[in-house]
Image 1 (tube, helix red, strand yellow):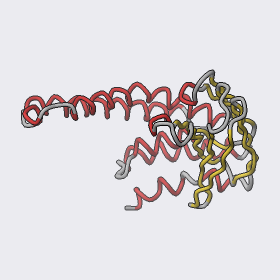
Image 2: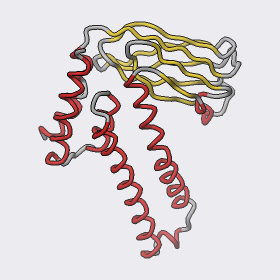
Image 3: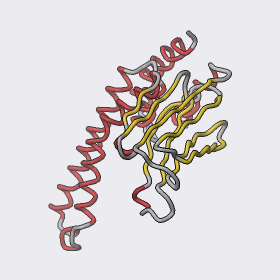
Image 4: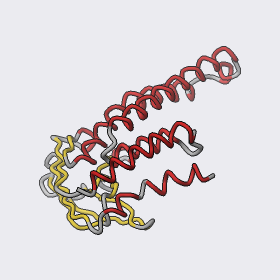
Length: 221
């Protein structure tokens, strides 16, 4: 049980090594205006915080302070009449400096640049995207299959084998990323995702100790 609890606890490290972090987020997405709206969502001490901005000629911005490096999500809503699937989001970090978001049309096609934490998160999301698409395609194939196919042990074994391969590939990406990005919160997030809800302590603990030590040293600079 201790091995499971230590991961989320140490992932709060950024909030412990910085009293306050000033952040700025600036975006330009197409030429959208009202009712297109952006939201900034993050948590502080377990409490969800939410800010919003109506786009004006595609532009929106946020600024403020948070306790330490803080993971956040930018969400878009294209209005009450837009289909639910049109709502979009991307992950960033509220960190010193400015995070810029640019796109000619939509949030899902946006390029994102910021500090080390946001840039590493963007890199991680790009690495995981093909795996996510493979899993989505597999699930679509499964749910579109007939009851006869689902009762076919050979067919199901092939589905399960493909699912396991996707999971193994995702874990390999997370492991490699965590090992090579030891100075950012995104590296810690990759390690947390790799560990899962029941981590293999013998595998995770050495990686976690090294990542936390190097990250703490970086944030103290």
